[in-house]
Image (tube, rainbow, N blue to C red; front, side, top):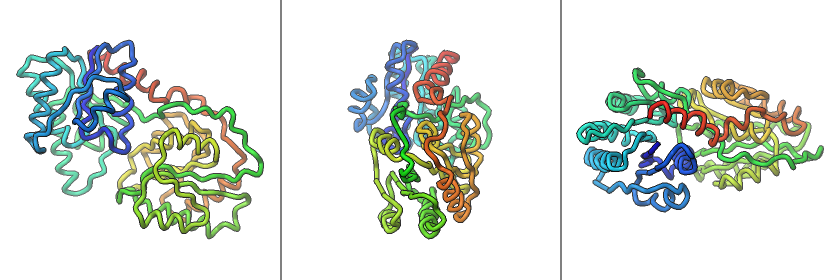
Length: 368
């Protein structure tokens, strides 16, 4: 099979794991004979050197409808000349507009490539922006052949789904080696939150307040603890975190650095999703905590409960969105913590390599 990925407006953003990983896995897949990535010039080196794919440069036409038409024309011509079977597009609203023109261009060129639109995030827009977004997605759904994405991502981004859709789950990049991790009885229990605090829609001040309450309830703790936070944060958030004696703020960490830290300081993973914006969203760190054999405290949301059920995870405590309930749950879990939780038996199935083979390649083969 011959595949063309469209990662424009996605690759390089935080959370763009699949757009970074899938083309790299595709290059090494024996089922795929050609892998092209269409993106703008700033990502040329990443595509060629890190992903190892052929690069299709999309030109700058000044944005808006003119940009969508120009991108669609270049992608369609390439799909026709290279006899592409599947065009796999990662969602951004700009790319949804582009797909409408792409389908028209494919028809004009008598090109039979199949278009997949991959939603990696649930809909976070509200009010008028959400209406505009779903209206745009309705036109996009007319043009696309297939929809895909994380659980509930397709459903929340559309008023009504009438095209066939497939689930492509979140996973972890590489299975870390934790076999040598010995837990000393006197080792502090580490509480980890990994993720961006910066976006307003994440409501991260909730967690900062929870960590403050945890410090205030320190007399209830039966063993030493340390709180670790890794990810971008606004200056005022960083100041609040650093003012808490329990907290170590690490800023941005590479995946390798993060895994080293998680191995060295095991404990409890925090998977927080606020109900207003992220009720339907899964969590990448949810998976990484589980594969590291961490106990997990998670938000009691439909998205995380669905993810826990799909992945057959145990030892998850789901907590309502109340700061005191969260502080109490963390105190209780720390006091009961005695080392790594049992091995997650299904962990090998939820690496991105396994997901790509089981879900993505299987989808390509059905469509091609």
